[in-house]
Image (cartoon, rainbow, N blue to C red; front, top):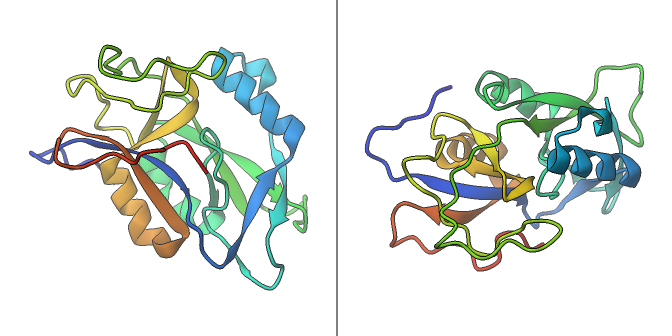
Length: 202
């Protein structure tokens, strides 16, 4: 899987589970806090080796294959992780996630995608001022010449606790995940495409 960088305008998205009839996962709080510290500080000592998680929603509903909405913790089912493995390896690696009903001795049914690439590509003069504490920006504008178009996903120094996705990777994930996925446009090189008004909201 490679990026098609012909003459298509760059697009950058935030991904989250859609509001469908399925269950989602909530990561165990302490491990999630450690992950956030790792993303913000870069200290690998804070990084858990695996995660436990709790199902959220009606037990009769099917489990989502993209079940977590945390900005910095995309989680895929084992099936989707396998289909995307070659392309996603360019920007990060997988860590196992064990839902509450999972056998901890078996292969993990879900995997968290830890994005390690941090790229200085934000146009600070045209973007919102980063929030204190998190760095979250309501409006993010990128410098087209600095966007890492060959990567599926990346993080930025101003808001290191969040994952940004390039459009070509989002297209591939849409093909695989279908209605499980919501993709919120953060920025496009094509000025006629309006960004989502609240890309980091829930």
